Length: 282
Image (cartoon, rainbow, N blue to C red):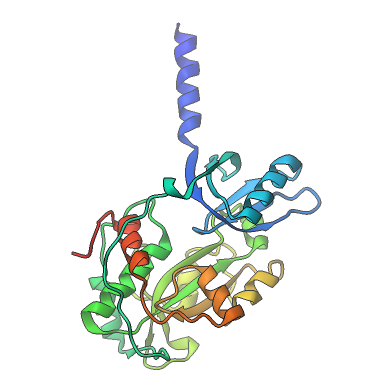
């Protein structure tokens, strides 16, 4: 009896390390010479497929090409244990806040160091543990724009396939609000990442939190530069206006000129719920 109980406890403990994610596939980086295949999901997570799991790779690639919604089960090291196709209706979404619009073209605000600290201290807390970084960043910039009219920015930190494989890293991007302090050059950027820092940070101080190699992440202006240069660097930084939510928005801008010039109502509603578990601004 004790042996059976022990086996049940072990099974439960191993299952506790699994994580279930509902998402779509953004891109696929196929491994070479025994490397794991990397499945990059829209939310920024990475799932690893063993190099020799050819049938799983084929099924995943087919799902990506069909733009399927998937329920994926990841193990403790982000390995893909199983997945299934689900209907879009099974993915939670909600509604209804008025979008905020400003005149185009976008002109970022320039603030003082004291103002940057003040903005940081007012950022909403009590975020959900499993909420996505891009939804937190979206609400933080949205609320400050409503509060003070600030035209802030965001900075996307992209982790390359080289970095993900070398450090078995479970994400391919992170994003945070950013303000310019004293000017609009790259050296004036201050990251406002309320979850991971205690105040405004320079770009290098901020990236050092996530980049174990402590290398400097080059600042780029096109998403395609990251996409096409996965093996020469560990990371890249790409600044955008506050309206860009996810990498696909940046990619779309580059190829069809689709600028985001306002906050989308449904994006805001979903971001509030995912990041802070509230159904409306309050």
